[in-house]
Image 1 (tube, rainbow, N blue to C red):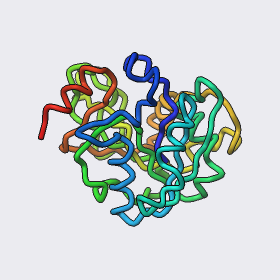
Image 2: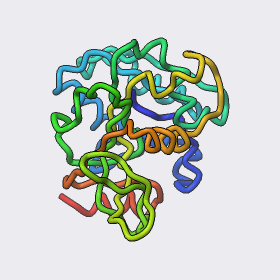
Image 3: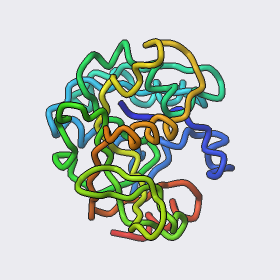
Length: 222
């Protein structure tokens, strides 16, 4: 699943007329990098949620045939349902097995063959983390023995990349397909307490394209 429903307030005015995943980096929309990499890994079906200017995503990507994929769209009410809410809304299309979740507004050189493909028994998610960028110097989480930890005390912290493998079990307290505004972080915090979330750290180039400045900086590289 690619998350593409956000308004992109910090990217205004660019996102006043273009959904953030369609903003171009080095000549190509952000979301197309993801779709091409997913197809290269043998993925056949991708679910994309949308809210703000979602019709542009549908028009630009169509049924996914040009990428060698089948794209299914999960429309959300104006304003979106937040990350967990968007996933819960799309669960009927995602099936019963673990699925990748990728933010549509990130840029990375990571080869998607590095994404986790299985979750051990009792584990409900495996998040990919990166070294903290300047705009998130305090990080989001810590890692210990391959497990996600709360960022407390003097622990080395890392930033969540917006990429991971998720089990539907993470969302089992909510009705599949329902429309509810639900943030992901509380579910992750609960999973950390229950020692149910794995994590690994990537070294590939990664950027949360959250501001026009970061978007401009990405254009400077060859």
